[in-house]
Length: 105
Image 1 (cartoon, rainbow, N blue to C red):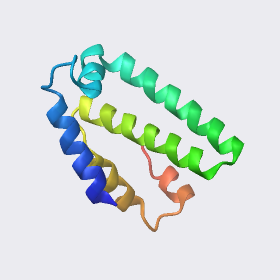
Image 2 (image 1 turned 180 degrees about the horizontal axis):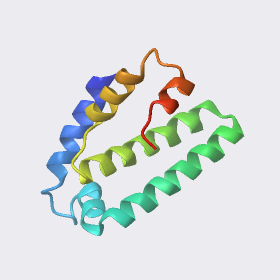
Image 3 (image 1 turned 135 degrees about the vertical axis):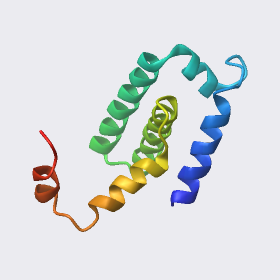
Image 4 (image 1 turned 90 degrees about the horizontal axis):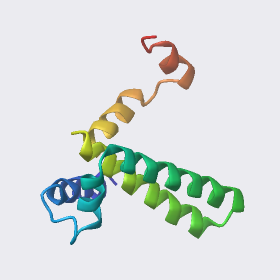
């Protein structure tokens, strides 16, 4: 699974130097953080609506869009999918309650 995320992360990094008129991702980067965040909000809402509808194909499609745009955000701020995977690995085996209690307030 992380192979796909890592390949996408690499591609998104390459798109930072692409011409915005030739690349959707380059256009998102050029519009800036607020536009990327707006797109994530839209995709999150569409994912929720798909989940409420219960159609598995729509849920998968919208979740893929949400993940993709989240990867764009990570790349934009200098992070990668691997950073998130590392955090998930750190949490593996922890109860959600214990993990939350261990966070700095």
